[in-house]
Image (tube, rainbow, N blue to C red; front, top):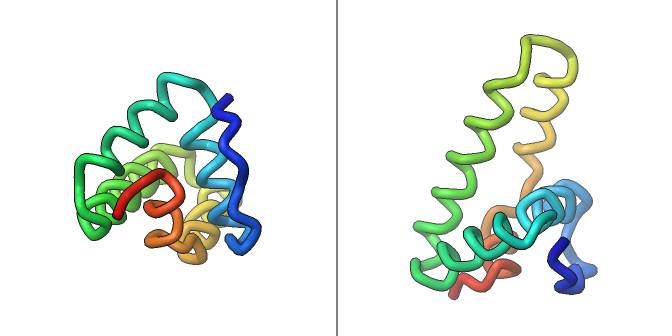
Length: 86
């Protein structure tokens, strides 16, 4: 797992997303490379698209509905900044 400290000002949904994106070294390196190579708008779009695809792949159930509602609360710009986008 990536040991980058969390920004304490992020809401729990955003911290959860950051934890998911940095859980293993390969995934963390992938998302940090995307964040550093693109402007913040492009990174937020890429993050949103990837996460919606992941959640949409879940079986239709309460879990998918809850995950979609959680995604609506993610602070996408702050998440992108936490990964290194400028």
